[in-house]
Length: 238
Image 1 (cartoon, helix red, strand yellow):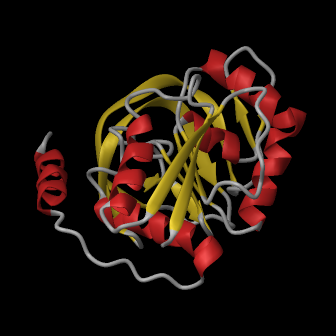
Image 2 (cartoon, rainbow, N blue to C red; image 1 turned 30 degrees about the vertical axis):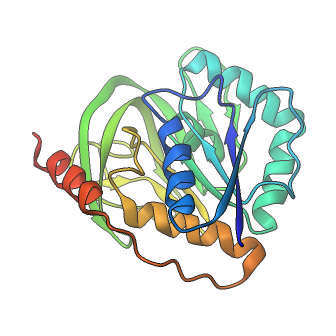
């Protein structure tokens, strides 16, 4: 029997707008396929074992939470997370977590928060918030979610966007991109949470996580009637 271990990074601090639901979704879609699942929450000050988890979920938070998290990453957790990624672990990061996986985030009235550089991107604080439903299409298919952020993220040449927005503002409200991915590391501004309404993305991340210890994995299909209906309903909203 295959086993999946999910790490919820900074679950007490970075869990805004339902981001914990991404952990629940990955776990449930694995269990429906007979895969044993363990979930662990890794908080500031905890030791991150690079060998333990197959996938990490890194949610969003306000600037004050990001200050705490950035300090903890700089104190050693960030290097251990990078070692986990180099060892084959997958990462889904949302909003604040996405920003801290880039090179830096520059908030208003504060020095830059250094990121991990796992995604070739940087973020600066904007003067207005982007709030509302967001839809996009791109190399990972059609995706849907909800954005609420003032950060403007700009991608470098080493990152691919999750897609081009057809609704909403995306990374920065300027270039039409939303999110980014590099290898098994994904970043997005889509809350909601994002995975329940985007089952194909959930399964992509799940498959890549399982391949860390099992080699090539083929996931049997699930009945995604309700998930597809939720996706289509969200896409139809203004």
